[in-house]
Image 1 (tube, rainbow, N blue to C red):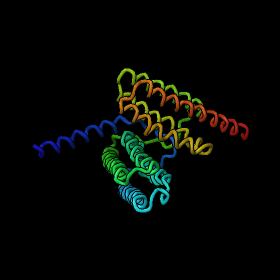
Image 2: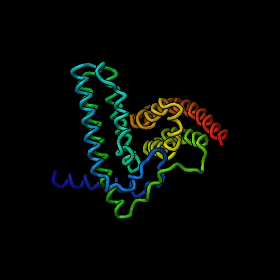
Image 3: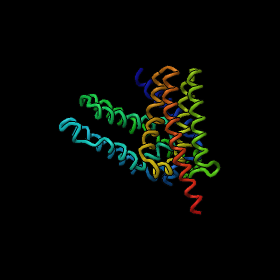
Image 4: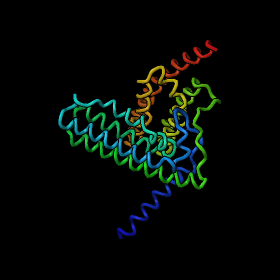
Length: 270
């Protein structure tokens, strides 16, 4: 029975991933490298980056276990992840797994910062590792589809059709839709809107925002990839999800102010 079940399960996962890849939009905003349009040629380096990431986090957790929280710098976890090309490869091909990786990273980060037992930190580390390897598998499958011409090229520059300040307004509007879908108990649709909004809107303004307030960008990334998806998947009350989104929208108001200031500066220069 198991011999029949495992291939069937694998096939089901493959078909799910395939549908996600084939229907992907062609635009990815933010600092996305051209390598995402040449996945097959970069698979070896992606695998090496996953190994490197797993090793770096393991070293950190081991140091925490033997030397305590003061011996580690948890912000390095974010820097590790954002420094690898694989970050963009999974982000542009299968955002749900991308969000799971973020959740795993923050699981380790928060467990250390809250001085949880090493066993609990290891549990979070394993969840992160599982998401990383799942992500690598997804990228390998995407590479096959890309070679078969089933994936459109990813545009690696932001859209010019909407100003960045207007993009913030659209993000807030879409977050309102998330509340509506969640209230209708359409959790999958709500989560899809979150992922799509992050990838195709927030990423487009991220570069400008980082120059203005890097901490704000990091907090919003966590909200999009960890806090809000977890609130939805944990079946929180509508009010609780609305509160998460209200908090995000307050941060987005701050982001809009910074972006408008940057836009005005550019106009003054030219």
